[in-house]
Image 1 (cartoon, rainbow, N blue to C red):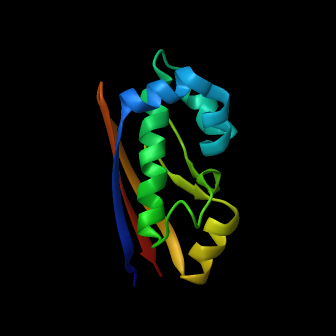
Image 2: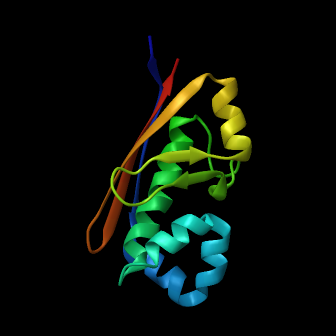
Amino acid sequence: MTSIFGVGVDQVNLNRVRKLLEKNQSKFEKRCFTKNEIIYANRFNDPSKRLGARFAGKEAVMKSLGKGWRQLNWKEIEITGGGKPTVILHGKAAELASEQNIKDVHISLSHEQEMAIAFAVSEVV
């Protein structure tokens, strides 16, 4: 039987993400996103929508794990693109999930012109 360990939600103003990308794209991308996330987002005319949704998603996942960005690295949480998004945990985030018997983290992402939102649920065995 499975149960919920935690839930998390976060929203991001995409204008803020656009400004970060305009100011110093490589620094923001290197700090917060995996190579696969960057490649996926840059396939679109406005990568800020996909990156913003993933940024919100990473924050939502951290909350669902009971942690924050000071305890986990942004790149330890990877959110796939295309079709149903999935969460892949790396490093310390994967260790934490294993210690807490978290078997899966479900994620839902949505974005419009100015806002992106994400909702995450961590499920235990």
